[in-house]
Length: 489
Ligand SMILES: [Fe+2]
Image (cartoon, rainbow, N blue to C red):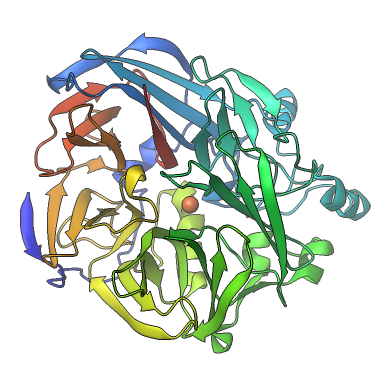
């Protein structure tokens, strides 16, 4: 573990020449194997007794079909890891989401659908019809999970959720939540306010509309507002900040004609329009009305850490900032090959603005080291917070040289970073915070240990990081995943 100034970057900006896939690729190179409820072997340490609940993580279980590879990492079939923790024991389960597309492609062992990085392989008339009926694009259910009181939702950016059994992970099917149209988007990054328990989500329509949903704790719709946009952007996520929702809408415009004519898949039809800058929308959480609508320089982000209102009334948020969309999108497209050569650097930035006018008060890089997947404890969502956790690179490594091999905790009060190196040939995923029952605080991270060709679940002390307090062996390799959650008992 190292404690450093957050701006002592040691990234090397060299371009490697890769002839072989990188070691982490073994975790993606073959379809993942499911396993039913299995007690997990402790490799080292002890499971904290005060850690009681369930960890879920979604990701792509399968990136190949019939000898072909997907067009982009985002196209793989969703599969969920569940680890139940309690009284010092851990039970793991891993299941594919039985989407209609997964089942249909499995029967013929070939790709049948278009997706984010793949054009629809059939005739154009069927493609066009399919765009309006959600039948030519595969809802991969692969991006994130939302644990509701009575079901688990497997989420994907551009369609309905799938619901699964919270314990067995049996897929129950597409879930309209009782109010979504069957073609309606319910994005992969809903947020729950820890005080009211209300859930917020969004969707972007092909008709240039941002749909904002305000729901109760069971995801029943309370209110919806549609905001007209001039183009179809990529709005992957947003942030709660006190009484507001904030959207940083980067200048990506999808060429809908190219998409409609099946000339390019979504990933390639997404154009970067840097001269248009980033639009900042501040929305009242209760009424969903626009509070302010302003502009900033151009950048791109997939993910936010958190947001809040400060004591002086200013709005503060942080996010993993990229200079543009194209490079990081190319990196993510290269992941299935195991050879990442494109350079794209995420940095943790903090933005402060006046929520009522949209005037930017400051917008600064706070952690000048390559990182992604910023996270805070769920109980602090929308509230003032001190620490943001990130997945980052080992010292001396940057994107293009290897996959993320370290976990960081940035301290806003001290302006310092605690960084834990996962070790040689160990690769991480999004760190998920889990509170213990006595006020203790843990991080759960799925690790791919390339030396032993094994996936592990590590439990770290969230206050200190350092060596894991427990390493659990997973019975099968779990591919590098996207997003997870913690459901307390
Ligand atoms: Fe995401």
